[in-house]
Amino acid sequence: MKKEISTSIQINATPEKVWQVLTDFESYPLWNPFIQSLKGDVKVGNRIDVNLGGMAFKPLVLEFTSNQKFSWIGHLFIKGIFDGEHQFELIANPDCSTQLIQSEKFKGILVPFVPKVFKDTKVNFERMNLALKQMAEA
Image (cartoon, rainbow, N blue to C red; front, side, top):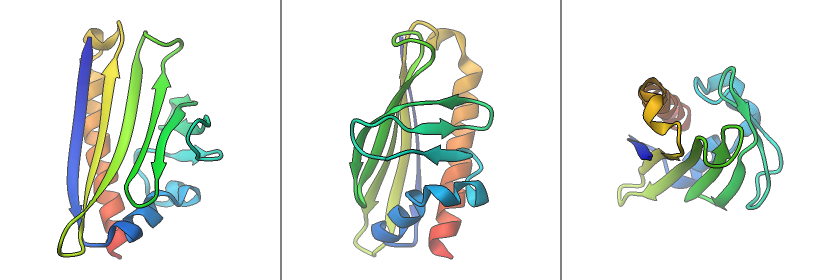
């Protein structure tokens, strides 16, 4: 079973500015209502420590391309139970603004049994997107 959640917001700042805020992980506790902390050496192939307010996990960084894309994959317990591939994508607009797309693809045997997780996740993505927009535009 698979499920995908995708959210998007236009930010009136350049991709470079949005990336700067998005990747200032030490500042997350100050502004990020979704990801309370993100620690570790954020490079492709490395595991990082992510805390989503009570849920801590160690996803594998899949992509980290400056000013464009940051993604990871995490697993609940073991691979195949409940896996999530999280992605932030920045798209430059002609007017120097940025389209931020935050998405996650879920798969695994538990996916059909946790519909509330998806509703809460979408709300949290939207909250984070708005907070990121406010930080980047400030």
